[in-house]
Structure formats: structure tokens, C-alpha cells
Image (cartoon, rainbow over all chains, first blue to last red; front, side, top):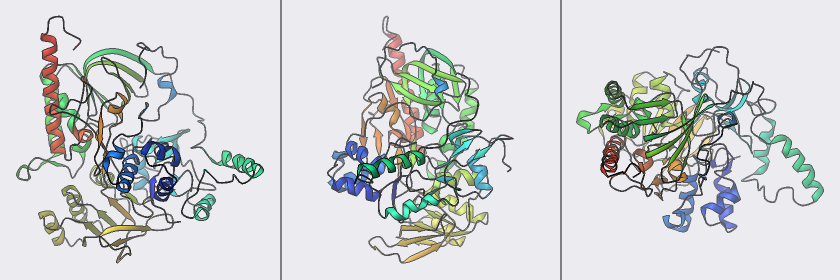
Length: 96
Length: 452
């Protein structure tokens, strides 16, 4: 079936974004939660900018997508062996 | 199957004519290698008993067991592709199978069996990594054009610099065969500059480079803390100053069936052709406007690779003249409307700028496209640095004229900070290196001031 794929990890299509927008999700964070783009293996590296462009074009301005969805560690999928059993010095630091 | 040592698994597979690497999660659409840069999910394979390994970042080794991890009965013929046909335009997971609780329970049970990305590992668990926790004067994230330029400046000024590069090769875009720096008259290949830098580093004792080591997080604090890892070692570093040069991710443009195997990014083709001598399939179409794209098309044609065409908006340039002489079919003022093919690209439909219907069809087996390049802002965003949206690219790390971000101790340079060319990335990197050195000098000059 013909689809324009925005997010290859989660198979989110342009049609999904249009439907999400119609359903009232007019900002990047809630559109992300509704459609699931940027929640797959690559964590948005291939789709966030596409989705932001889509919203900014529909709403007529870059201001509506001024902030990207919150970015959280880790940047790439990582083996648990990298962290398992480590006593973390400086553990008073909290991820934002 | 044969592969070269130091060659990524994905490259060896493409060289051997493998086109389908797996199937997508929901619609079971075929997937093939796209970015070859370790940032997308299209080349995931099960390697030596571990699922979801990025085959473009994993080097070949004798006796390696490489398996596809999705598709039943096989990734080439996957019966669940039927989902894609039945779903029509889209499959609404919010309302699907919610008409009755019985239907919902059956459907949920079925979906649970199907979903997930790869099976649990059968390999021995890897050894627990060694943790190294220490303080450093400067950490540079990214060994591409900007990162290396900044690190060189700082190391030359006598500072202790730790540089992390996620890939096995230093250089980033400098390694691209079609990369050139400088004004046209001194059109210098990137690898030449890389060679010059490498010879200078011999004399810099303070420069410590970790290749194949990925920075996973930056934590906010008075001093930014950097978490990085490779398979053997996990680093947790308190950095007095941090320079983020994470580059940008190439993206495929949006058109119908833009996920068909056979479609890949221009940088992926550059890497395949110049670095590994591999052409994924012929005839080949290139879509792009930049000089590097024209140069790549010319070099491909010169090597006798069958090009079905170059689709470009660039009309009058030296590169275009050379391509005309080389007999490459050129298509101006057209955009890609749709890719067609069952499981692999076999033709592209093109249309004029405002035409909804295709007026030209190109038969091709592979197509490299220059899409928007989206800056890798994530690590800066971890630390709370301000970013801003630019519609031609994506989220760019906001910096002042010195390259300093909204976090006083963190700098950013290169494509992640909005540079559009390697020349610009190099300038920004050098500028940030100098600015960072200046601020380290002023800190150490203050009485009792080591904590800037």
C-alpha cells in the first residue's frame, strides 16, 4: 500500500500525522505521543525534524515548534553491561 | 559470504547483492540499508546471537554469524505484509480491535506474539565494562570536521583534550570522497586536511582520542558531566569545558514509498562508492543539488556505473557541464513523487514543481537522495542548552558568536550548530577551539579560580 513514511522505526506515515492533527494534537509533544513517531529504535533522529516541518507548515510558523520534545539519555541503545553493577560516583547528579 | 576486515557488515551485504535487511515493525514493509551512519534503524540484524545490532557500525570478522531478525516465513516473503495492504492508508492503533472486550483480548494476545524487535540474545552476556571516572579540562564530542578543528586548536594551545568519536574512523564528512573544502580555486579534498591534522597531533601530548566510543548522555551541573561507552569501558567525565560537534543526520525526503529498499542517502552512496568500492545496484538515480552530489554523479559515470539520471535544481554550473559531457541524463525542475517496486525499488516517478501527476518515469534499481540534514542537537539538549528550529534542517543548537551555548561551560560547532558546509564547520570548530582556550586561560589567571 502506498504510504509516505515519516518514521521508519515505528512505521508512522504522513497520513498518521494528518489524522493526529485532525484529532486535535497541534503541538509536537502531543502529536508524538499520539502517533508514536520518535519513540522507536532511533529515538527520533530520522523523523523529529520532518514532523516539526509538517506542523510548522500546517500552522503557518516556526514558533509553534520552537521546542523539540524532551530529549533523554541514552542517545543510542546500549548494552546493560556498560552500566551493570557500577557504583556511580557523583550520583547526586540527576538527569534532566 | 566474503567481506573485508575493516568493512562494515552492511557494506559487505550490499556488495554481495543483499537488498532486504528486514521488515518494519507495524506494516512489515521491507527495509534496506539507508544511512550507513549508525543513526537510523533500517539495517538492524542479529549478529552473533545478539538482536538489533546496527550492521553499518559493526565490522566484519571471520566466522561471524549474521541473520535477519524479522519477517515470517522469511524477510523476502513475509505473510504479515498483508497488514500493510489491509490497513489501507493507515492503521489506527487507538481504535483497532476495541469494539468488544473479547475481540480485544484475542487481538492483544496475537499482537503480543508478533510484536517486539528481535528475539532475546543467545550469546554469552558481555563482560561488565570497566568504569573510568575522572575530571578533564576539555571534552570534545565528535571527531568530524568541527570537532577535530576545535581539538587541534586546544591541543596546540597546550590544553588537555579528550575527544570521543562514535565511529571507527576519525574525520566524519572529511572522509567523504566528494567532500571539498575552501574556496573553489583551492578546492581541497577533506582527506588531505585530515592527513595534515593527523601529522600535527604527533606533537600534541594533551590530545587523547577515543574512537568507536559513543557519548550517550550529557548531564547538567556546574560542570557538565559526559557519559560515554564502548564495549570495554564506560567513561564518566567531569569536564571543565565541553565542546559539542555531533554533526547532522542525513534524512530521506518525503514522497510515496520513501522507505523502499534501494533508496539511500547521498552520504551512504558516497561512503559505499569511494571508501569501499561498492555500487548497491544499477541503474542508479541521484537526486540532489549540491556540488558534492554532482561530483559523485560525475565520478560514478566516469567509472562506468550506469546512471539512469541526475534529478537536480542546479542548472548552470561547471559540474552540470561536466555531467552533460559525460552523457549523464539530467532532469531539471522535477521532484520525486513516488517510488515503485514490490520489495525493492524498480522505478521512480517524477513530476514538475506544481504538478500532482507524474510526467516522467525512471527505471532504476537504486536511488541516492540528498534530503534535509537534521542537526544532532540531542546531547546539547540533555544539558539544557537552548535549541532553535530551522525549517530547512531541523533543531539547531543555539550559539553566540564565540560558539558558546546557553550553558556557559558548553560550546557547539559544526553542523549541529548550523554550519551548512565542511568549510563552515571547520571555521566554526577553529573559532570555538580558540574561544574555549581563551576562557580557560582567563579562568586559570583568576586568583584561586579553577572552577570557572
